Amino acid sequence: MHISGAAQQEQVVRSIRFDGNDIVMAVMGQLDQNVRLIEERLSVRVLLRDGAISVTGEEFMADSAIRVFARLGELAEGGGEMSRQSLLHLLGLAAENRLDELPGQADRSVCTTYKGKQIKAKTLGQQQYVDAILGSDVTFCIGPAGTGKTYLAVAMAVTAFKNREAERIVLTRPAVEAGEKLGFLPGDLQNKVDPYLRPLYDALYDTMGAEAYSRYFEKGMIEIAPLAYMRGRTLDNSFIILDEAQNTTTEQMKMFLTRLGFGSKVVVTGDITQMDLPPDKKSGLREAAKILGAVEGVRFVHLTDRDVVRHELVRKIIKAYEEYERRASARGEAAKRRGGVGQGAAGRAAGSARRGGKGRPSGN
Image 1: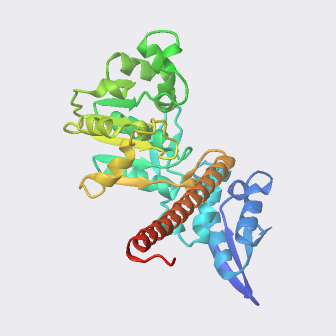
Image 2: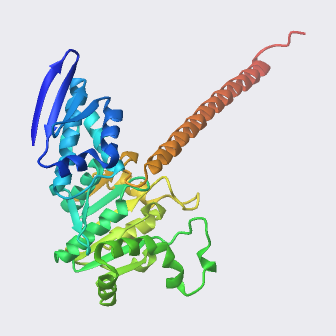
Image 3: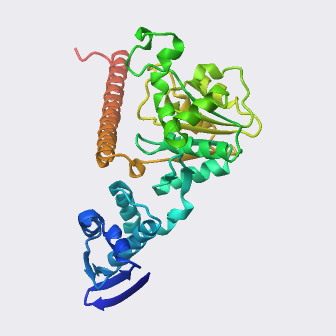
């Protein structure tokens, strides 16, 4: 790979060359979709000349584009492809001069699935999440839908299980009714809660396959259960994941965290914008963030809409809801202040009238 540059008045030209036309084509994307996205987001012009990719633009943007192309080349040389969402994240980091904070492709592998697919951290936030799990016994990950909180945690659990770093995987969720009534579903309690635990089953199937999952489940080496089933237990040498933790109460969260035994890791995931608790109940996840932030061995990672790895529209939907909630909160605070000022003025006027009635003689 060779990078060169030359100045052209207020703009510069940078170029990068790859080994092989197949790598060049992969870097440019199907129908040049990667090129168009880079040109649009970084305000540069990209040309393919004599097997080299040439970029023209302002110096910082041209250099950023070259660095993005280099990352795409690294991925293509490993036989991989970059999704549009991952490329958008890469461009965002490049525009902020933070691309060096994201490790290379070889350093981001989390798990190899039973089909041989590499599961990797796709964003800077996800990489920080993975690093936190590796470096601490208890990790909290708080973020919106689509940021890979649960999937990455399960992938890390499977890797630890395969490497014999954990003897058992325990996955749990609080069985809170998200607007629907579980009691009217057919079957016993397990049949009723199984659909609610389905995302955990799906993540395990994707990583280790249904056959391996069934084999380990029958041996008791994998357990998926509602949070209430955790009470009274001590979990040693286990990788334990609490999903949808925003729907735990403070008491449930304390109960769960104190299940931690020797040689175990705990990962707690949740989205505090999607709580299904009754209005009179406090979220155990919110409370834990206030109580445990300074405790050694406990890490908190906050993902944002920039870490969303689902459809690009999911990120836009999340941002729209966040903006709506900010405006609603601001209106509520303004209304409270106006109400407080009005009540204060009325109180002062009433007090003045009372004092006037007692201390002043009548004018008649």
